[in-house]
Image 1 (cartoon, rainbow, N blue to C red):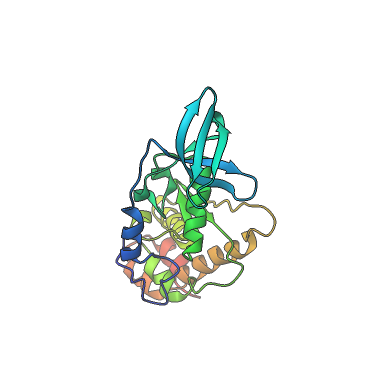
Image 2 (image 1 turned 90 degrees about the vertical axis):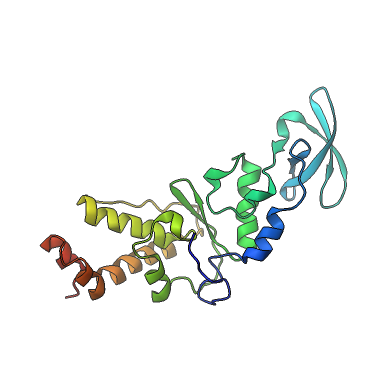
Length: 221
């Protein structure tokens, strides 16, 4: 992971304070008891298993300390705290619905709208324009591997851009979601990344040894 500074206002919506994260990731945890149960209001609630009988399990909710009885099939396993606010959910031990939703919610609450899930980048609409699409951010992601930087649409964009240059093949990006999810804005940001990257004469100079057609792509006209 990169050494981006959380105190830098340009990166505060991309990285988590390491001290706070370390505290969250070292909380006490009992993997045999910790679980998620369905809830009509919240979707899922964190709970601890108290007892089991037949196809039912009695649990105590973590937040309100309420005792509930639920069906075994409705109980989902909880990931250890070391996965708190994890950047790539494909690395979680349990990739169930409750764990995915919790991680997205937890990261969103910390101001982090982008999260990876394997090859996919999940974006949660912040309903405001965050300062994470500036030229400084573009420069930070340019030419970097996915694992070197925090989750961002620019990382996916740069990966496609570099593959186009290196493999000399067309690339495609699928941006999907329900109405109001932010598809249009994310598409605009992808185009902006390509436009600014391709127009940067500095990159063109650094690739002077590349085939002529690649140089022309990168040279502003």
